[in-house]
Image (cartoon, rainbow over all chains, first blue to last red; front, side, top):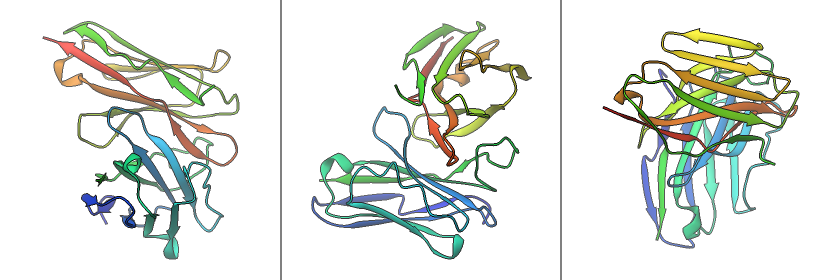
Length: 119
Length: 111
């Protein structure tokens, strides 16, 4: 697609329910990131996928959080047994490639985010 | 120590002034750095990238990188009210290639 697409844009759920957030990256982008942004805060790294490599899950805050990326494209972030502190905007971003060496191809494009509210 | 640190602000400057935003990072192996701008309620958008020591200029924006001091800055000349936003510094951390953001600096440009 032309941009990074995220759904749903807004999700209100009750404490204890499971939620799934979806990210459709730009076609051909091999790197995909999930970040969480709480109100008035910066971007908290959650997980990073690069091609067929094992994902970097070091930012996931607890085992209630998991993510997968199917076929190297669409990614789903799942939060089980949601808690009120999970309320935040969940941002997905993709880039043509990952890695930290400068190539110009590791610039991220962000989706519009999924706003999660846990009551 | 956080991987990427910024002063949270808010930073307030008058219209037409120079706004200076600062960032430090902990990973000496980091090679490339980015400044993203985020308007309230919107997603971050890239303003500048820099990977070599020294200055990089793009219009009213100048990014500065000092690898010896592990310091990155963004200067905005002739600041405009439309520049009012949160500015996020980011750098790659460790070998894995994940991009880490600072907590952001809120900039307010007063007419």
